[in-house]
Image (cartoon, rainbow, N blue to C red; front, side):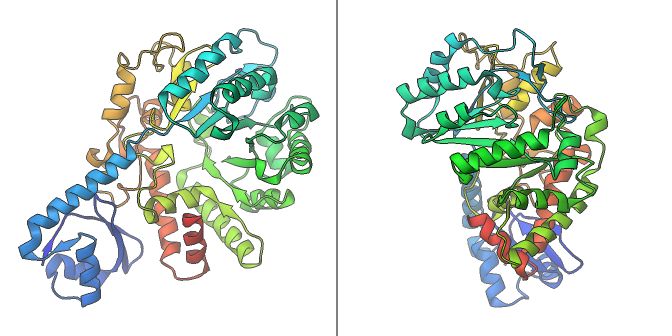
Length: 465
């Protein structure tokens, strides 16, 4: 038997995770690893058959054929990554009534002028969406606080309904719910509209992070959520949680907050280094501290599931999907080449076009550079050096620090974060917060997955949901 190329990562003193460029993987004991490297013939038939099937080893007479099969499977995996399947983001206004500490959006004050989308551009935006890809479409309304200009949201929906058809698109409104009203609820009734809302913990934690001058952000969330639950549907509200130094002290808080509202889905993420999230806030905790918090959180969630309250944490589900579900590449942050452009087209309030929300943040933070690809009136993707390099330089298969990582086939590349933190798109992986976070998540979750206890069945269920 001959070895084929693979990478490995120690999960414990006696167990290793191995993978190859095609995305095949296995957990093996230390003695099997020793046999693989010393004498690939000296282990049991079932393990040998599994490793042959997954292209980790090959019979000597089939070695060339096995190499071709490995290359072909690798190419197939990469082709699935570069499929154009964008979310279309539209920013009707940059104005916002909140002043959140970690906001990754460079918002404008609620009373500012010159930060709203020209309504005349809306027909051109919808025409562009139809030209770029095929239905069904996902149209995400971003801000600022989009409900500041609810009239523009109405106009976007009306134009999409007339030109695309209401059964061929979903609209997601990213909002704090502070400005939601009975008028908006009445308008949303019967439409394929979702509200994506930040919920950062129980009242004291939420209000510490999400500052609403002269008002109570948590109460606004509570009132808005209850409006949606009572007059629309519980399924029309989803939450996103940005973990701050205040929440990291008490993982129970975010679980209790979701249970308080009868919510079953959580989606947690660390602070991103964009917009108003300055270095002091980004560095208020280490990724090691985040992962310790997250493991405690996972224990709490799994315990709730054991006792009959069904909860899903979607960042865990996404990481497990990447490993367990062949061909899954629906999450832009874990794509290589990068999900910039492939997974997002953003139409900004000022008419500019971007390949991701993070590219928009880079443009605001670096006025001497251009991170757009032209405007709605005059798109210029071919002439953009930034987007050329964001794609060509984001194949992690050849990145130093990724090339020998066991999680490379399931991980991604984040040129925007590398530019933001290190000044260039590839970045030094040993210094990368992105790398520390995702590698840490994969290791943490795989230990649970291979543990054989309740957490394993929970993760499998999440991955295949």
